[in-house]
Image 1: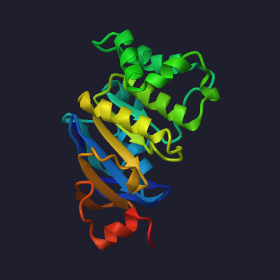
Image 2: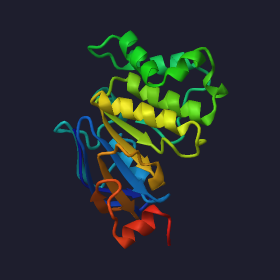
Image 3: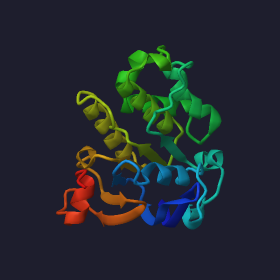
Image 4: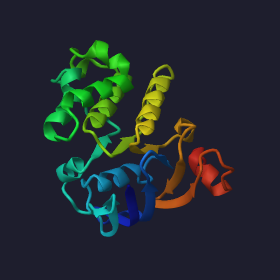
Amino acid sequence: MLAVENLVVDIQSSRILRGISLEVAAGQLVCLVGRNGAGKTTTFRAIMGFRRSVSGRIALDGTPITGMAPHRIARLGVGYAPEESEVFGDLTVADNIELPTWTRPTERAGSARIAQAYEVFPKLRQYGARGGNQLSGGERKMVSIARALALDPRLLLLDEPFEGLSPAIIPSISDGIASIRKMGHGVLIAESNVHHVPEYADALYVLERGEIIYRGKPGETYPPAVMKVITGGA
């Protein structure tokens, strides 16, 4: 599904990504773990076309998307829920979730896509008429992911979906992501806290200073250098 090969990205003459490669298959949940500033968000923004790469290749189901405009990448079936959620405050929850069905028509009816989003996060049904600026942080995360799912994507990029949330809301987010994975979507998550990596994740990449320093399965015995990164050590 998604293949990133030797991706290099500079920001203001500083090298942020140094030849990273990763893969996400359909129905897989893959986690990209790294400390703040390691390059996780830059990786996501490069995949979505918001950041241009110096070199490397990004492909979706074999189709090159490197350098493609963000709206074209979204129309190919890549949904993005950024770390800040970016829920439209002047729109209701229902309007936020419905919005992608207007911008990306697919073979599936918009009503079916919206219903599926509410099935993943049933709590949002009671907030349908509430404005986006009236939501808690956890509710905004749910809306952001539900909106990305309503795009009817093949691939979902979820940037820090658990960051800053109360322990009470994290299980709802985790259960929702598990449901999305079971539907056959590929899911790539960026996380700074390895303890937030879901136990059902299929693969783990560790990013440090713009380089992939580890590829493997969550819960494996990690090398000491990797342990320092994922536990926040110096």
